Image 1 (cartoon, rainbow, N blue to C red):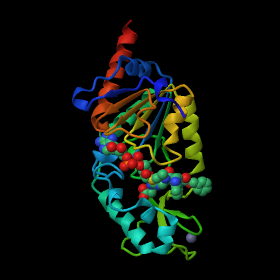
Image 2 (image 1 turned 45 degrees about the horizontal axis):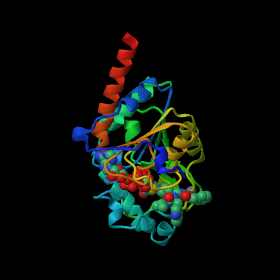
Image 3 (image 1 turned 60 degrees about the vertical axis):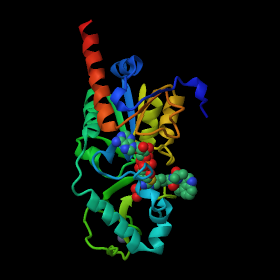
Image 4 (image 1 turned 30 degrees about the vertical axis):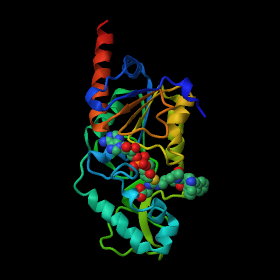
Amino acid sequence: MLSVSSCKNRDHLREMDVQFSKEVIERLAAAQSVAVLTGAGISAESGVPTFRGEDGIWNKLKPEELASMDAFLKNPDLVWQWYQYRRELMNDIEPNPGHYVLAEMESDYDDFTLSTQNIDGLHIRAKSQRVLELHGNILRNRCNTCGKLTDENFPGDNVARCQCGGLIRPDVVWFGEMLPQEPLYDSFAAAERADVYLSIGTSAVVQPAASLPLEAKHQGAYVVEINLERTEISAMVDESYLGTAGTLLPELYRLVKEERTRENKD
Ligand code: BV8
Ligand code: ZN
């Protein structure tokens, strides 16, 4: 475990007076390889409820009671209805500036990797070209028995059946289920080679995704967190900024582009 003393952890106050350090601006301007992990917090300003923050949907219900195979097999219609409700919430949401900045960064850096725990598909809608969806995508369904994927939307509150007779479920990763191997492998490989690693809008409690920023730190990356509140990793990253991703991320990248222009002039 990294000791706190080894990190120059500098908590920065809420965004109204957040001053990004010279270091993070210069490091991002000079970086060859950048990797990012996002969580529910980056979609909060798009209107997607988070899980564990103040208004988190899991403050009322236990995640294991709904986002698990046991829950699904015990009461398929209840779990299906929960996902139908969450899909409805997503009908009128749009990506926010935080999503768009990451799509811009992807095209600016030769080596840029975006890993997300989110299942809302907003990074794809913000035109990020390569999104490693570690926990799947709620807009896709698959058969629980034969694994057949389908984009078909099954209206209604009762769980549908596949031709093979299996139950149709959302194509998301439930607790106790393995993450998709390739996105997971690629996410760790990117963390290991990153010059700068950004952890954005995640409480960093769900494994194995939450290990990515710490693995990056362990492998020498400069790790920066942007989150509304302190998290499990705030004391272990190099810099932790408290505030909303939709405001702080565009501001940070504006400063990085200014730094790049300055350097090109020199
Ligand atoms: C696995 C998809 C092993 C579904 C999700 C006991 C029993 C069973 C398992 C475990 C156990 N103990 C540990 C485990 C492992 C478990 C785990 O980590 N549990 C935790 C809770 C302790 N992990 C798993 O089960 C994983 N699988 O380990 O398999 C295995 C190995 C071999 C063989 C077989 C199996 C699977 C984990 C994936 C679970 N699926 N979601 C669904 O969504 O319905 S998890 C869920 O949490 C979401 O995916 C979400 O993305 C993820 C992480 O949450 P966050 O994104 O961080 O969201 P959160 O609300 O927590 O935080 C948001 C933050 O944003 C807050 O801090 C807030 O302050 C901030 N914020 C708010 N607004 C803003 C903001 N920040 C910036 N700007 C804003 N505007
Ligand atoms: Zn099937």
